[in-house]
Image 1 (cartoon, helix red, strand yellow):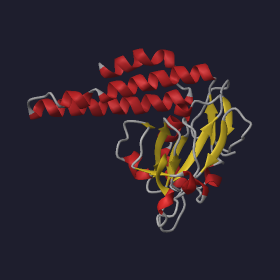
Image 2 (spheres, helix red, strand yellow):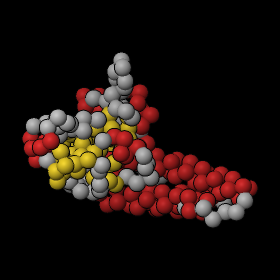
Image 3 (cartoon, one colour):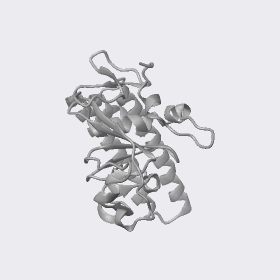
Image 4 (cartoon, one colour):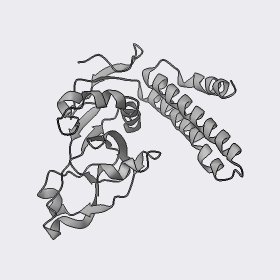
Length: 239
């Protein structure tokens, strides 16, 4: 096990990203595949099929429920694509490295993903946010001469601290609230009437986003209690 990317309190459970199909944390890690495009029977079926470019266009929404293309059961059976249950954490392993989505419905992906299924003691959203804050490190360990790519064997050396499920829920509630506040500037930008006001709103949005990123890291490491975030967040905004 490699050194953890984030520190964790002593009551959190330290795990690797290696799957254990009977375990409570990460049960499966799979890639995806692309059925032959020369065979019409592989395409336009009932199974949504996701590619990395589809989740890099909108990085504000972590959930995905629709895809540009779909494949058939025949396409699944004759390729490396797998039908993944809803709640799978989908991490792009190349072009780009480190984009994240969680499927709201069962779907398949192409080979540009590593797909993590979680057990009953790990919320998919917790793992997704953990990947997001560690993107710089993911990019460093990606290999390849032509383009960088993450491999399962590299990721399995990572260690991650997992809090009890109730604490995960509290942390995620705060992260979601911070994300909501950080996005408030987007509709406000549409209502301003002068360049000066626009610059003020954009500056405030950047400040809020930096605060959100900073606090998310501390929440995921246990350095900051979810119960104390509201008062600290308000103090930073008014500073």
